[in-house]
Image (cartoon, rainbow, N blue to C red; front, side, top):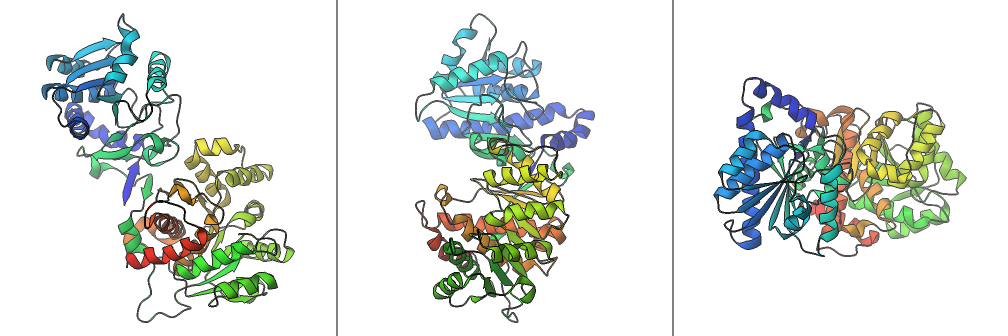
Amino acid sequence: MIEAHTGSQVRAAETPFLERGDGPALMRRAAHGLALACARRLRERRGKVAGARVVVLAGTGNNGGDGLWAGAELARRGAAVLAVATGDRLHPEGEAALRAAGGRVLFLGGPDGAGAAGRVLAADLVVDAVLGTGARGGLRGAAAALVQEVLDGLPDGAGPEVVACDVPSGVGADTGAVHGPVLPAGTTVSFGSAKAGLLLPPGEALCGRVVTVPLGLEPALPAPALRRLEPEDVAALWPRPGAGSHKYSRGVVGVVAGSATYPGAALMCTRAAVDAGAGMVRHLGDPQTRRLVCLASPEVVASEDHPAEVHVQAWVVGPGAVGDPAQESRIDAVLTGPVPAVVDAGALGAAARAAADGALGPGKVLTPHAGELAQVLAWLAALGVLEEAPEREGVEAEPARWAAAAAAATGAVVVLKGATTVVAAPGGLLLAQADGSPWLATAGSGDTLAGVMGAVLAACAEHPDAFAAAGPWARGENRFAVAAALAVAVHGQASRLGGLGPVPPTVLAQRVRDVLRARS
């Protein structure tokens, strides 16, 4: 499992070390790890460090100091190192170390500053050490102009290798928000702990491979601000039957999906729940859709019942359930009832209304994409639950912020779907999964995810300690967020099984089964 912290959490953990005079030792440790990562990239790029042209973009603070100390180490290994000072000063000890090792310094505001962009573009490797975790906003002034000039001059598919020091300058360390021009990194070397913003969109796309350098302060860190499940976590946590299990104990999933207009959503959702290992799947809908569901998946029990008339451990409501008053009535009953539910697509508007009445709870899992979340937030603002609501672009700019805001406002888990999917629980737990292939961006993919999520939600619904193996943080009401993240991870892994390429949702469900069998 990847655990990430905010910049303020890491700085707070550093404080006792700084107070007893260990600041220089921490910086040298960080710089050494940064230098090792740079040397590794240079060897991969050109076979050796000696003779390489290295440019360090250095800010005025400790982040710049880390870059300068790393530059000094590379200079001692034979690299030609130039530090470009983006402000009016440099970290004194770092500058002295670089000069002593044979490195050179150029001040962006000085007489040679006009040629800085050309020197960056001609380098083999650039160390981005301008802004660190304490920065607010992005690059400004001459530094922003320099990076923009470099971006404009980068040839397609070429340019220097970029290694970011702690975070790429302009990417929010805590949120992943992007401010102004950012030099995309091939590698980001993060100190003490991975920073939450490195695993969150949109900044995650600018971070490249994230390498964490331990500083010795890790035992002093609090609970992480963000978690990401890895394949071994999925294998360990996915609910599996035992020798004494039966179809009811494994979890019964009720599906309110499809309509005469959109019957396919019901077929994909129910099939995915079956393939994800549900003990039993029940479908409620119109006669035509029920007939199609039973033809495609004869193991599904289909009826025209009302939710109050059947017993399930979890519901999936909303996919394709549009323009059908009977389905709308079923959705309202599920949303106001006590049973956990995955709430998707056509049910999100009703969920916003139910939240305004205080009817939702942590067992409800909302699964919007950015446009749908913007609409949910607008409904919540109109109903007086939220003070403000962004447009879709605002959600995409700060997805973690708005997913967390929606979770707090509704009391439900919010799964904000995207290339990186953010899972926010009302109590503050945050997970981010980036397992899926870009080919998942297709109609029906969300219906399949909803079915997979319904299966794992049903399996954990009556077991508060279902995911206790992950730690105390995954117990109790947080288990619903963990279940959602597990489903997102498996769904994403299924999309990559056998290589990248088109994966129709009708095939994706079967691949979910293959992923789970491979992880057993």
